[in-house]
Length: 600
Image (cartoon, rainbow, N blue to C red):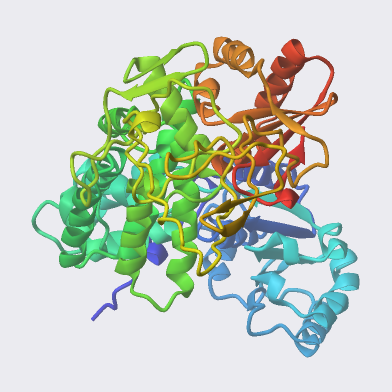
């Protein structure tokens, strides 16, 4: 009864010609075998499953072959037949033989000539696992080994190899195998193993292999013995992946800010026992592919998949701005990091990530500002938002907006600003009895009754009246030069009425501030250069602080934008100096403390 042999062992290449995707290495090695110029030490480095150990075994057999064929071992001579079981070819696992004593034994053994073959070959796999002492013990032997000895070192982590070892070896870098090359090899194996599989299923395995042929063969082994044709859907289900369809549907919901729809896709995948980590990784890959489509003229070179896949990705990419795609990669990367270390379930991490991607109101990171600004610019350019300007007013009306699942249809995405008066140094303060903003405040102001005069039995104190306040009819007017008055024998202190309020010094400066009359012209100049920037400054107010400074008060959002955009800062400063002269321009946040003021 013959035992079953795994596909990656059964179909391991026996000659350099069968090695897939590493022609830049196999061509050099075959040339050295033909010329007889084989080196004494080689270093094969690269990711797993790319053919390092396979090439090492073929090279070990080829250097002892009696009749090599075009640089490949013939496989028929006596040395080729013995190579598989000969003691002259030693495979050492450095992960379990990494001590100084193991290398000392090797140094003593290498002195003996080969017993059966032409060369004594040592293949040290995962050589980066050797200890520092073991590397030091190997140095001299590696530099000047006996003529009959050859060392082939293999590693997946080149950065851990000491420079002294690197300088003594001929180095070859193994590349990741492309999905097309993997697919060709898998199709050949399926035909010989009688595995019925569609091209779509083979390409899915090729993409999931991540450039490793051994991983692809391990996945193919799941379908050995199948009698029915294996489709792409069956292949995805067997390996626990979601596939392109649900991923595209999920990202389309994200682009449309349809949070409920995106969460339903995740729920369906979870109910179907799909791996949430794999779904998260596939979403990140799809976002990366859409970035390649946005930034390259020939995305087929950078995106793995057929023409139908490229069309679906391109259609979905049209719904995203470049800034939003880049911001999405950061959110997905953060979610993948949390996925590996959090105590929450993978489903909760993925759902939280998708909610952040869908709801722009949760974009609190500074990097998200570019995304939100770019979307506003696109809406203005397409006519979805109409911006018009007057003398010193900006009226923005939203022609289209986004409705989220948890809000009513009456809530607009973009606020509407309509003002007909110039900005003052501070907004008016109203109490509960004051009329709403759209009423005639001056005529609708209620007159509060003053208590009736007190009798001679006692005195009453009448407090000072605020500036610009009319004296009610039931309070006697007093000449400004009198020091005190009496009302029914009650002595009160004088409170002269002032006709105008003097400019006040602010906390940020000892200089007197006055409203900047040229601010309307400055706003017009800014709007001509950049309408969006002008609309963002619509809530700003400006003051003249002495003769050498201008202070502009802006909301915190606008202040953050200015700090992160040097071009807008220069444009603002140029417009101010154009109408005011050579003055310093300061920015302060509305309602903030003095420490939050900064100068351009």
